Length: 204
Image (cartoon, rainbow, N blue to C red; front, side):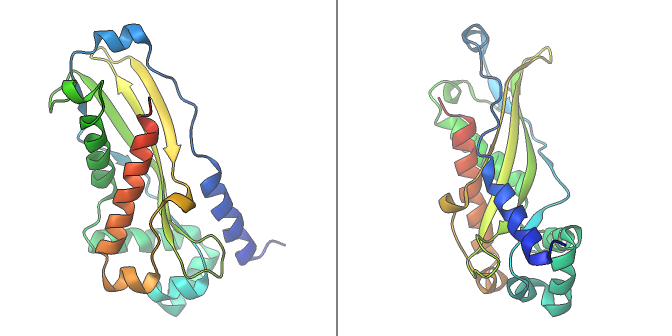
């Protein structure tokens, strides 16, 4: 029988295995036709965030009873974590959209064509997010984030799409005590994660 500790270790490994989704790249002819681009105002975000780590770490945010439940139920701890983000004023969709847009502004192809009402639209979706540790006994946590994008033409055709995730080694680290005392630490960590993912999605 698989123990709770084994389950969350396996989950943590799965979260960091996929760094790129191998999507469809933009064809030169389609790129040449782009006159203006925008980023869709609405970002779809999964309603099941993942929190993977030690019960001791989880107890800092959710209390001993909550941590015990979390060790057995990813759905339960995900709901509690989403509630913590909302109470702290942290909107994952807004963070991803802002960081993706900032990256677009500096892109040599899309930057000059970026406008609020651009006819070609980047549509973003946060397919996974949460926090995790490298081992079940570590006190060091980091954000995980998986984002899918598609570039849609004015007539609704998907011209390009891709998916990218963060690697634990690349993202800022924090402790549960740190983010409980100052949730802005967690917000900045997700901003860094979103910037990393955006760079992967818009790679040359």
